[in-house]
Image 1 (cartoon, rainbow over the protein chains, first blue to last red):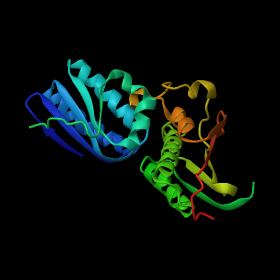
Image 2 (cartoon, rainbow over the protein chains, first blue to last red):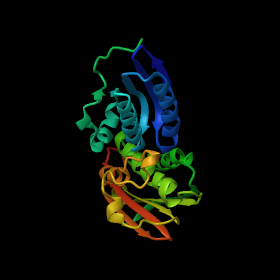
Image 3 (cartoon, helix red, strand yellow):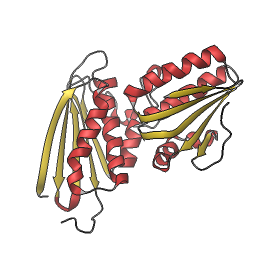
Image 4 (cartoon, one colour):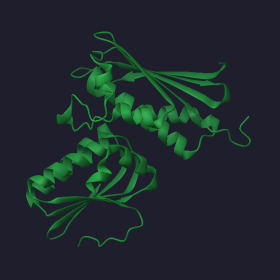
Length: 109
Length: 147
């Protein structure tokens, strides 16, 4: 996982498999930098994710809550088609924080 | 149903084995030439069930997880994932979407909902202090050249 920082925003490029085991490290890395920088926007970029079980949903919900503490928001971007069913099942779509792959996004500086 | 092939697997309930378990099951099933989406569904369901063993069944300890995969007639796959851990007090409650007893571990409470959604049939049997067996079935689409 790679994390890039801008002035007000942080983008975490998640990659590989997200399961209960790997989510722990991802969570710790993201939270460490979020707590230090307190950005107004945290982007979770899923373009490199090959597999995800419901631990990925836990990861998003947890970061959503953390960002809310600082008055910031989370955007989930570049979600591969294969993960869409999991995203829909989770009810996260009602939070309107998910953007599908193909949607043009400005990249973090 | 006529059994066409079978495999058994047992391993310790360490979180590092979650990936091993789903990949091992997927590797066994490649002989059926499943679609990527079918394989992904099964891997997801296996991952949820094994994670339940790691997080809940053997909460503060390490125990054995047993997986049995049967390939039956017409590409019907039956997967049993069994533990001898703490058991589930209220299966109905445990299966409710968003219900979790491990919020601190950021469990979304979606394990059973995902297993249900990603397979054709799911059943859960559990006894307190004895363990839990989760069984799910999925029939693969019949593909040209596949028997």
